Length: 89
Image (cartoon, rainbow, N blue to C red):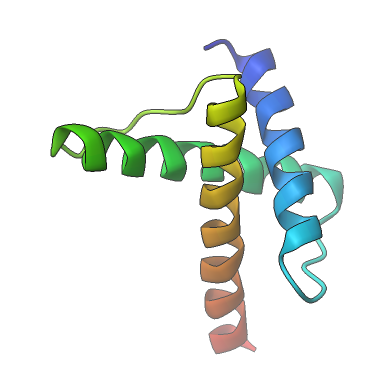
């Protein structure tokens, strides 16, 4: 998948994940895109691990299932980011 599709997927997945996840995450549009892209990689890697049993670093595709996995991954990324920033504060 090319970089423009990753940015679009990241924006969509990050925005949906921030809307679903409770609380204020901040970060603006760049943070939303980055969390969405990280979520895409987390979701794709988890899906690959669950279906094949091998842990590969893979992103999801720009499809309905890919967006769903990216949103789930972005929610996990938001949760982990919240844990890291609360410890530092």
